[in-house]
Length: 580
Image (cartoon, rainbow, N blue to C red; front, top):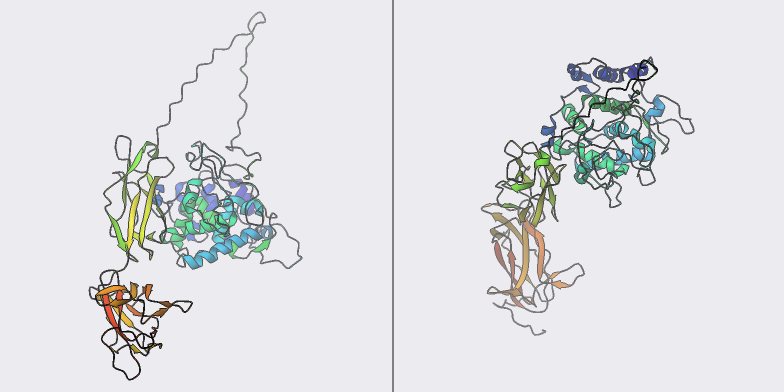
């Protein structure tokens, strides 16, 4: 690898300071005899953050396992900056112009993902150039942009199977649905997600209703959300480094991604799909990744044939028989990983999960990993997933969180935050990378309460028969003396103060079609606890009528409404008019 970097350095005399620093950092970290201290050298975007401990990374929302540290392309960006978009009709040239060009569909996917994240997670500050850098390192921009019109790769892009032989050991988690391998997982698609991570991190980036890791729009958006989890701000150098290291926990990988990101920031342009260059060097020593169905070595190793045993001549022309080959000693079985010893997950004293809409839950979910005999298992990653018709999330806005169990086998999920939708939802649990019985939790979001309703004015509300009430009912809601905002209010025109059934005559509201209605639901107080009801109208019945307002929490208010002919005194109770 060092020789390869040397060749790259000799290709150009002119260079930018950023590219030179990145090449120096990469060459130092990969040169023969380099020590671990070299990993702390200056990278393209500044001082590198030390690689996080995988267990610690798993403690963040979603966990640190995007690619399971699968192999990646190690080709460096050219030493000279890419030219901006070439003039129409200008032929493509080699070097920086070629590398600076990104296939049109792939580039569109990166920019669309950046736009979506700018809206959904504005505090993340994700640049599309970071996605382009990761896409270059992981798959050579989807093998030079070999995608169809919808952004799906022409054949699957697969990493080596993760069977523990030189790579992580991850047994099949998707029944081969994404990688075609029912024994072990493999990194999949242009952003190289492993199936177990895609199961919770996948996104639909092109609006076709599917979450496909082989689609560049879906994969780019998923990568953006993955990098923006845990509240990271990618304009902050430390957070940027943490995010990239969580994608692949390697200092060399971080340096390389930062180099490509800086390179693309200098200028890039769109090229036709399928015309991009494909890198040729990988971190595991293998060649380019091939689409499924073509020849692709499972492990990039070359085995030389064993020499045939030499049979020395014996006196008299015969040959001496070689010594018998000693028997191969049996290979001892690999000890099970902590995850493989887990039989089930059990509740660890969570208690009742209830919160008011918009508030944080007072309790956090605690789950314990146990063996078949009930022994606790530490250092196991537990995935918590919010399901059901709810807008509740974990702290940070995510619906999935992966937490490592402690020495007592307990994983505590991030705090739950209730949304505006009321009712029940579920939180499911699972052991990452291993089939074990999980435990489900039910959480309940209740309506915001108000125990008091009061009119904001005291002007009598009156109207002539068949007319329109001059004023609108305005009220304010409070709860335990404090303003009660976003509280649901029900307004009903009742028969009398002692009979709360809906009246069939007298004042009324109008629906969207202008038809009379005498019950309104779905009304909400504003942030100040105030609510102005729609206009009220009267039919030809005269008298005094009642409007009753109620809220969750016991707030009740009855408002008198008077319908009388002009100049006529109001009657104390509803009575038919001469025209009714």
